Length: 72
Image 1 (cartoon, rainbow, N blue to C red):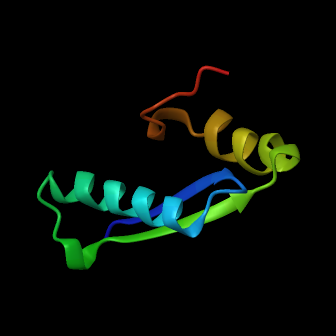
Image 2 (cartoon, rainbow, N blue to C red):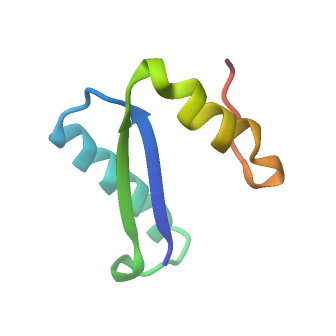
């Protein structure tokens, strides 16, 4: 562990997703987490579905588990 799930607008290339995955993994490793315990998933979300599938359930309802808030 940890397992990180990234939800973002659809349309990023596989290379972009690999770069994001590496950056997240590097950040976690910099805090002392072993690389072999990290997993990262990226879920594509259509922009039209963002509010219903991500914003309301994962951001608006997150409470004190959300450590970085969006500005929208």
